[in-house]
Length: 490
Image (cartoon, rainbow, N blue to C red; front, side, top):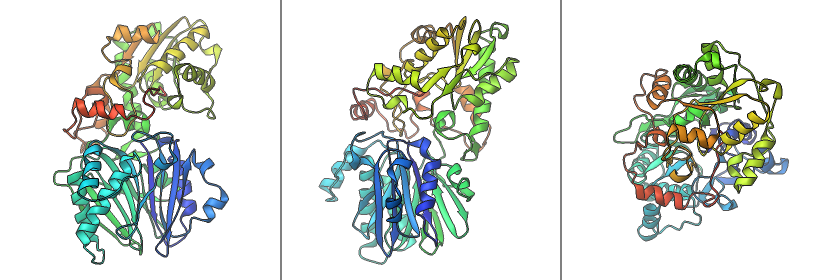
C-alpha cells in the first residue's frame, strides 16, 4: 500500500500537498515525494524517509505551481533501498507526464517485455509504477498522434491501459500544461476519493486527507473510472472499463486505513466496531467470559474491536501497552533478533494491568506471529496468570499480490498449521480467530452495494481471476527485503 494525493487549484499547492501526505503517512514510511507544475515545468523533490524528514523549507520553496501530486511509499515491488524507487515518476513524452501509484501490477514482467520490444520504451528501475507510467504514456501518444490533447483522448488511453495491465492500481497523473488524471482499477481494489473546497479539487487515497485539509468529500472514484481535471478546474469523468465491479481490499478496513476515514461508503471505525462485535461471539464460544478478567488491545488499530469485545462480554477494557511512536515499524527491521528488540522498544507494559490476571489480548490481525509471540511473553513477564489472544481478522494463510507486502506462505504463522499449533507457536493459552464469512458480513453490512471484497490473504480467492501459483512465486522472488521477511505490526 502507498498513499497518494493530487491537487488542482488556483493557488500554490506545495503546503497543501505536504499536509495531505502527513495525513497519509500511515500508508507508507519508506519514502515521500511531491511534484508541482508551473508554466508547463515540473518541480520535484523526493527521497527516502518520513514526510517531515524529506521536506525542508528550501525544498518546499522550490515546489512552485497551482497543481501537483504527492506520494508516501510503502515498498511492495522493486527495491526497498533505492532512492530511484521513490515516486513520483516522470517521463518526458508525450507532453511530459508524472505519476503516483498505489497498488501492485501482477503482469509486470510481460509489460516490461512489451514496452522494450514493441513500444520501444526504456524502464530504468525495478518499480511496477514506472512500468505503469510508460504504458499510460504510450497509450496517450498512440491516441493523440500529434493532435492537441482532449479529455476523450485521455479516456481512450485509460481504456487501453485497463486492457493491458493487471492487478491493483489507484493512479494520479499530471500532464504538463493540461491537467490531472486519476483512475482506479476495474475492481476498485485500492481506494481513491475526490474532494472539493475553495476552487480546489483534491484526489487522495483516504478521505482523512481531504477532511484534514478542509476539503469536502464529494465521492469515491468508481472502479474502472477515469477523472480528468483541467488546469482551469473543469472536471470530466468517464467509465473506461468493460466490466467494472467494486471489490475493495478488506484488509484496508481491518488494518491499513485510518479509523477516521470513510472508504467506498464505509466508515473504517464502524467496520472495526462491527468486527469486534462478531469477534465477541467467537470468544464466548471458546472461553467462558467469567474466565477472563480484562480485555487489552494491542495498539493501535485493534482498539475499536477490543472495546466492542469488552462491552459485549461485560468485561473491563484496559490499556495495558504504551506505544512509543518514535520507534520504527517492526516489519522493516532486517533480522529476527532486531525485530524482537524493536517490539520491546516500541511497546511497554503497564504491569498492574497484567499481574495475577487472565487477560484477553485483542489484535487486528496476526501475520507472521513474531510480534504476537513477543507480546504474549511480555504479558507473562508482567505477571499475567493466563494469556488469551483474539484476532479481529481470520487466519492469514495466503500471500497478498495486490499491494500489501505480506510474507510468502511458508512465513505465515497460519500456513499449514491447526489452530492449536498456531497457539503453541504464539505461546498463548487460547487463540480465537474471526471467521471469514463473519468478517465479510460485519463490514459488508455497512454498504449493501458492495457484494464482494478482495479477501485473498484470508481465503486465497484473487478477485482479478488471473493469479497463478507461478505468479505468486515470481512476485515473492522479487519481494522487497527478500531473505529478510516482513514482520507484521500485529
